[in-house]
Image (cartoon, rainbow, N blue to C red; front, side, top):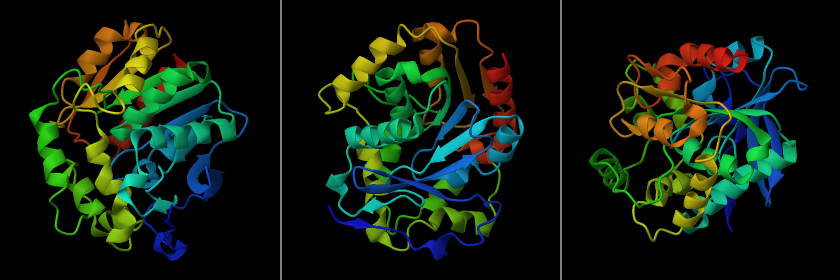
Length: 295
């Protein structure tokens, strides 16, 4: 496997991102993660999606750590400061899940509160299904866990098709387009920072094609198995979707209906927020997480 590592100078002086980098090795790959707050506290695990990285959570780290939580946000392999295999076939759904299992196991995280958005949910809900004993509660935002047994929305299929036709894929442009509030040019550039040129983008380009859309998808059986666990999940499960995301709209109702731990929880719709609701309403999300943990 040929692997690239984004030069460190690409991450110098990014706006509102002063956080010390941390690294661990998983299957021979270097994985970066942010680790803020007291190390002895129960962890809040923040998982990002396509094509962002832990920069997405920069406005939430201080508010969560100030509430006494240990806040951990890994960069998925292929994103952020994590290593980037160069071939698209190097990336599979299973490998993404296994790499994040490696983070859970290496840091020995327990009593985890998971916050997951976009592919952070497709991966994170698999983690919950496969290591449920490590998790205390879940907050799902603008995400889902597809098996391909139900047809995907036309909005998702449109994104999947469009993602493969970009001339010069730009992560910052994608994130900007998925927000309601404007991003400064420096913030847009920060989302482009992990990708000096297209050879670094294999993971970002491949991700949309890995979402199961048919019942015979390679990830279908593993996702069905995770759903068997989630259908019995009685620990607290909260949805915090946004009001302006056509791709995942309605997914919160499915999660609420199928997961027992969602019953009676203070589910919310975040107003004036797009797909990347961490950008649009990060402080609101941090408050929701803090209140959910406090009970």
